[in-house]
Image (cartoon, rainbow, N blue to C red; front, top):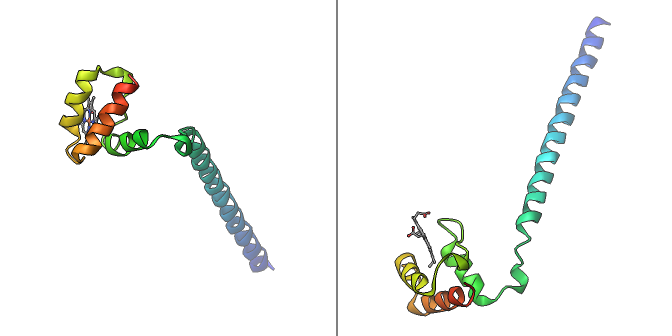
Length: 102
Ligand code: HEC
């Protein structure tokens, strides 16, 4: 009898542990999903190809700089300085995008 109760108790504890673990897991999952929703405010569907290129080429090492943060001339300098992995055509597109939005 004692062993039977002990067994049941062990089973209940295990059940509770699994249950609380999955609740924690679900909460984390939900939090991640909500996080994505917030990031999802960036509207990729309606983004111009120029902006997409800028985001792809200039946002991998640091946060994207606000186009307004630099003058036309400075963007030319920076895009040539940091756009080493871009073709000349891509640099020209990015510069035009930044200059049109500063
Ligand atoms: C290979 C990594 C990398 C990529 C890709 C990159 N940058 Fe940077 N960028 C840096 C580093 C490193 C700094 C200096 C540290 C910092 O400010 O975060 C920097 C700084 C800057 C600055 C601040 C001014 C300065 O010199 O400190 C601007 C503006 C900038 N980057 C623009 C761009 C633009 C525009 C592109 C796309 C053409 C780009 N970056 C792509 C690495 C990169």
